[in-house]
Image (cartoon, rainbow, N blue to C red; front, side, top):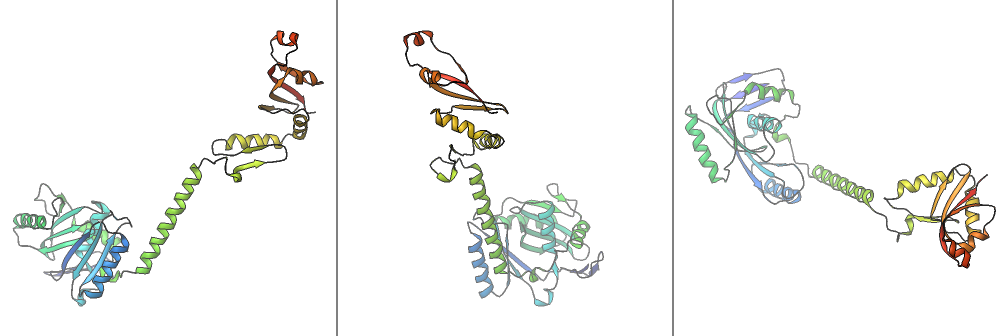
Length: 331
């Protein structure tokens, strides 16, 4: 890593392709886009790049309107555009280690190759970057006052100098080591906004969201009996399937499939006009629960029937309806 500083150049670590610019030759500004979709933000970026003379870059996290989006403006001569800006390294480090995407922050640093400096950012975007004299405490207070004019009133403070009680202490060597090991750290001027790539990712995101939403609705759907597609019908019986009865219904169908004499049960019920209320199966017997008249029970022969009745009905010859269990032998 080669560092081009304000006072002198410096070599750090071993990554030769990484040239870091830490000179007073760059001007920054950033605009937070409020209530703006990613489509609108991309239109603004395209307009700025088409009619502006400076470099513009869009930072965004997702496509929703209320998510933070930052339009970064950088003024820098072409001779330095093959360098990684120290400001971007610090912002990337803070995003990965210390802050959230929507947080405002101030960095106060002392770099051996450049001197004292203050960097202000909104998430990954840089609002301003200043080299300052040695009276850093006074300069920090002036910077805070200036930020109020930009409506930045709440921010986190970081410093490589152990002089501020409300600042979290950072180590510049750790920040540079982070950049050294991160292959994604590249000059921001090489990060061209590929609109087709953006829209491709947006389309993929929307399609994925639709698929997940539809899958969730299908999973939670209670199938309506009015929908004939959910009706299981054979010559002998018909049932409606729903998410609530699916498991029990499948178990019943498996049992019926394993019962070789299911046709015998069906034929018996058809022949005697019996409507099954409940059915219990084993390998030898089918226990059929149904409501039958006493007259119908007396007509059924060669079959065991359990039922309870009032004896007076039988004496009077009344045709009482009773709940009966019919034992039908399957073998």
